[in-house]
Image: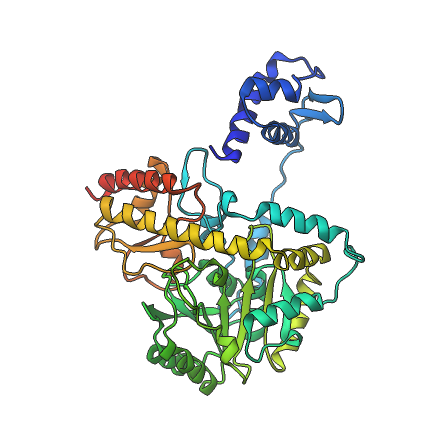
Length: 478
């Protein structure tokens, strides 16, 4: 059982028993709760903290937990209807109305209910995260001289140098900005490169979080189809000519959601087309460190083969570590770097220095390459388990490409199958899946599902999750 599930169940049990205690009366000790419910001390601590946050109990260090007095009635709710006018009136003259919609991102961020298998997760399961190595790195970082002072605005020089070496080619430390996660870096890049109302070319399908960033900035995403070899250069050239766009956002390595890798013969062609159009290529290199054990040598980042400053490169450590380890790099060459730097400073000042110091400790430790090797082996095993289970139990779902990196599979539904109905039936059957519609900036060619194999506890959950999905499939498709 997941730790979070145990916490929720224990909190609910204690919540139901609170009426047994008078106001201010002490609850059983943590040790007694551990023995009674057969859970860990950490689970007890977190369950009590949840009740304390709800105002139901008061915890006193060294004394224990006590039933809290009832909260005073909340103040009457005011009338906020005026905000509907205020939030929309100033956008009446916008060429492209801004639309802040986080639903496509929340699908992979929201935790499912207890007992639901998480095929919609966007991060490594805790058992795959380098928790001990991160904890040790953070502890060592906190003792570094000056660790709690203000860092350079662009990031620590040693960390910028590490990212530059990892990207390679003409990229130097001077061209790297340390940012607070890939989402933040993409936001900075799009704000720097395209004014409100402008078109921005995107892969189709593509990452919903990037589409949300573009629309929130008042940009107009224009889709360019991808196939098993990545974006299609002739269609990219056509899109630049038709729209006059000056930005193309792509994921050349293990693209989300298709898992495609940009073919060698297309790499130079994409850069040539963008350069001819006077446009930038935003390269979102988000899962380079989640390569599978059987992948073979990886192609270099596009930025490593770009002396002319066409590519603005985004590289993040979050996917290979933890959702809360939000450290990434934004790399560029030429005058655009100063604009990127200015926007980042205005938006966030800088990434907290303790987190940057901890990153240096982590990537410089022997635990880091061991962790990457372990994840590569685990992801290959999980991918193969999910692929095998799908082929045996759900042959009606087309799996056109099996990736050798990343954390998910992209499945096409047969014509006529209802994507929303299948996703809803799957949730009722106890498995959360990601619908494909949010990955398309225009009408999709068919229904799709994205299934993650990284956010579950192991291959047993993968097999059980596919079995539950089959149950849902039989209800919807027959």
